[in-house]
Length: 356
Image (cartoon, rainbow, N blue to C red; front, side, top):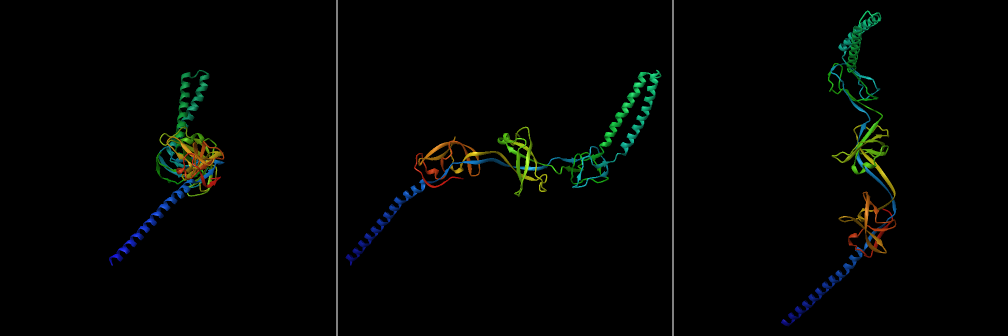
């Protein structure tokens, strides 16, 4: 019985050894296969053949629409309103009477001064005849002339005061909301209404300092309204004389050329500026760039081997970047698997494209 048990134990041990040997052999064989597969995967890369492309250098900034001319209507002197002509939302011509203040006291003073001037003028005419026959001294005659001129000056001052009781439209435009009525007592600081031009709109925006040299008077720009796809045209008419010290931006003003009811002063806009065009730009995908501490490199395939090349970059887009120095037309640039390649490594391609 003991002998039979020993035999079964020996058979079990042998089977167990065979099992472990088989498992270890399978693992070693998998390990021997995996490195080759990994090596093959690492050597397969994507590449791009560099060809001249059209590169448009453009930036997008935010802006605001403004009326070309807009004025807060206020009176110059305090007084009581006796007439109001502020048609809200309506067009008025330049010089139209909008608000009139009480001026009866000023008109009465003016009439008094005009009467005094008429009397002094008669006296001056008589003294002029007397002076010819030496019936009056030269000094008395000159005193009368002085009185006439003084009254004339007072009349001009009075007329100016009367003109200040009238608010006229400073230009052709549309009246805003009215804030006064007949009988109101108003002061020079009180807002009567607003007026703005109807057919002229401008757009103001700011650009970063590095683009300031590219902005020229007469330059065409495009813009869109918030949440809208329609593009509108404008033309640069002026810029500030210098860069803002706090924002390092240059403020630009453009005159809107397009006509639309959607263009309302005060609205937000997205302004698109096309700064330059290059029809022969050499572009590569951004993922092909290898950034380093002081420079940038890309991997160029030559004779089936990888070569690390120093490059200088230009304009960056969302997925492409311009190469200004370091590569030529027709070069093949590696765009994937660049972390596994070394100088002189043989290259196996997965895909090669001719356009980005």
